[in-house]
Length: 410
Figure 1 (tube, rainbow, N blue to C red):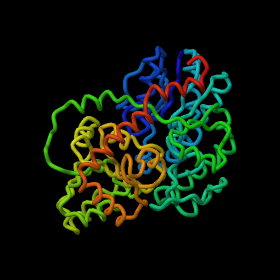
Figure 2: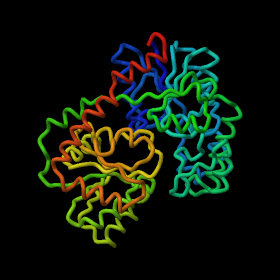
Figure 3: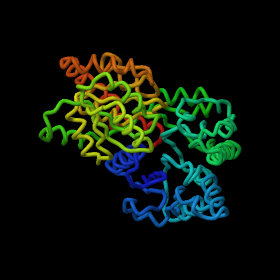
Figure 4: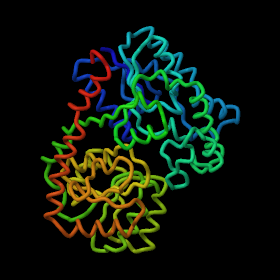
């Protein structure tokens, strides 16, 4: 089969790319031909189909252009004629058996769905966030979980300036949701795939095409993790680890507050983000000499560092869909202390594969750290449980079998 895989970027970007890369490999290993459709970028992986990609949109440069140029970019992010035209060219040249949509909002846009529907091409869409029901994509407004747009009341995004704290950005985001709801292109999708039960229930709660929603956990290729397990240890020091973007919604501030109780416990932080400077200031102010910021690392480096840790902490304060950071830590046999929010509790089973705490509760997080850090046998036992649980929950075999039920002949 010729499978069209659509994603806003065709290079490593984050969790969405981890999934896209993995599912592409699954399709190819099963003998299918993958036809990518994405946005041009110097970092894009080479593809014979890159000539069909849409031109790059860099929102960071919008403010540096004229107002008219900025308006054009904004309109293109809501309704892309270019994406329609380029996809038409691609479909004229290549017979596509079915389309697998991933992240397309703001760049490729849902307008391509009508092109696919017109040619009777089956469509499945793996949902990596919540954009169709939340203009800010992640149900967060000014650092707090927010569901004010329930029932299609997207104007709340504007009145509360939810998107980046900007009235203009929030207006554009709300307008985008209103346009797509009015055009109803989502109706052309055959199945919306939710990677976690939490996400499935949230979309159902918002009454988003409930009859088309299916829950399928991601697949994952554990080959690199198995290679890392065989590598010699890089250090003998004892430490715990945080891996993620340094943003308020990821809970790093709560973690640093909890670490004030443990000057003797080494914490390594991997990642960067807009809150990095503020977090480093907090470290200095509270004399957290036990906290080390390592910056952004390659995947191989991250896995090596996680491998040497006692356990991982995932203190997220937003509706995580399914964090690959947790998947990888558990696959390395590490227990996880995770916030009781989003899809995290589906991986972190309290008192079995790790420990849970209420998001934003630094005192409770500190208590969980104390329990696990001082009990090596518990770390070992939970790490073993974590490995077994994640291998059963997240694996390529089950993922592909579930996709086969959606697409006849796959």
